[in-house]
Length: 186
Image 1 (cartoon, helix red, strand yellow):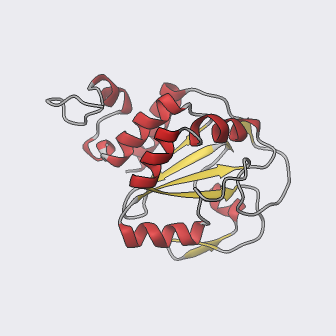
Image 2 (image 1 turned 45 degrees about the vertical axis):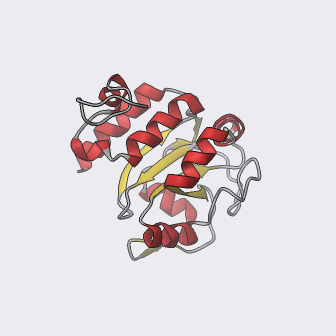
């Protein structure tokens, strides 16, 4: 599974190539988005509990307060009505300030600060989006800005769990949004 996760992350990074803020800066903060949209985003522990209860996939947005591309992602991607609707229907969305040094975030029975959780997930730049399956297992982390037109197909890919069938994102796009080569819709 680790090799699959690495290959998936590499393929998605290349396919979606967008802007990213490198690691750096040092402002501590808690829970609020760069754009201040708190309705869409849940705190980590609440979001993970809801995902377990509802059996939904999870998208974790690792951001920083100083990251330009995090703000662009809020303004251009997360505010897109189609993106918001699809996320609300199919995912639990969580936001974590990747530089936060306070707070107890519980994942797989271990407690982390926000900065330690970001490290544990392998976050190296911002924004970074972690995708978890319905069991709360990490599928991949995609670094950098992702425009709405690329983000929606990625969400469909994750929700349909094409990665479990070893279908690459590129193959998924060639198949017009299907994991199965005999069907084509998106």
